[in-house]
Length: 228
Length: 155
Image (cartoon, rainbow over all chains, first blue to last red; front, side):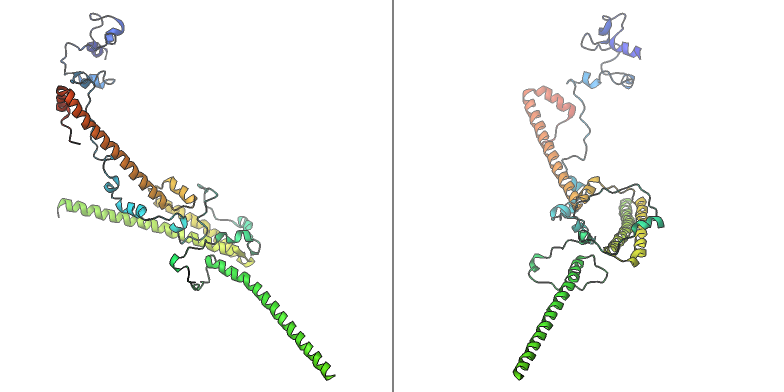
């Protein structure tokens, strides 16, 4: 290694001043070894510890002129969407209007999914079935849910077509097993209204009966009075 | 059948087989997810108006929920090579359509593509302009340069 180094920058004993200039730094220009031709540099000098001076930098007519980099076939100059056959996907997503809400992507999923998530999901836990002791924590109180929790699982009413908003659509026959759909609200409303309606009806009936009794009594009194 | 025809036939059949296999895996996962969601929905119905006789049904539904999660966990092994960007989950957590993420990705890619194309075109024009002007000022040197690197294609 030192032999090659010294041959490149001259003999340290016989040639040139001592110190750093022997390495070629003092003169500012490297000394080309006289034994070797201008174009021939031993391959070992490039391999061992990296090139000291690149041949192109020294021997080309233009200093520091390097070879052009390899031309890459795929650059930003080409339309990459066409190149990767994504035109159909581009037209599908960017040509049409994509709806904002998550419920438009998952229309069959029940519940209020458009609201932002509150809790981060818990991961990397094992799934083991619940034992009898664990299930005691799931003993619930009887009766309906409090009002604040009632509407949580009901989907928001879906927007109907604008052209048909004037016409009232007859309600579809409700399946017996879908109380959590939007009809559930109507059902619940009906259920809630029904006892009220019944009460009102009863009240009305009572009033009617009382009034009719009163009128009968009045009539009787009048007739009795007349008779008497 | 020539070699090229055989290669195209092989590649098309391979693509169709892989698509079919992937579709089966996704169908399997979708089926499990639908069952899980249905189970949760029925659980919600039971809870909305709870009766003492519904306790056994509730316990059953809770255990179905756990087995459903186990089944979904098993599906994960079949789809280990599917990568989903984390930003998609941010969209879902915000209650937004995940297709908007795809749309925005494509729009950003196209915008960046156009930007880079503009830079390449501008630099190519600059290079040709510089070479032509340098050729007027340093004709001999530019002739040597062109001899080394070859004639540049017209911009």
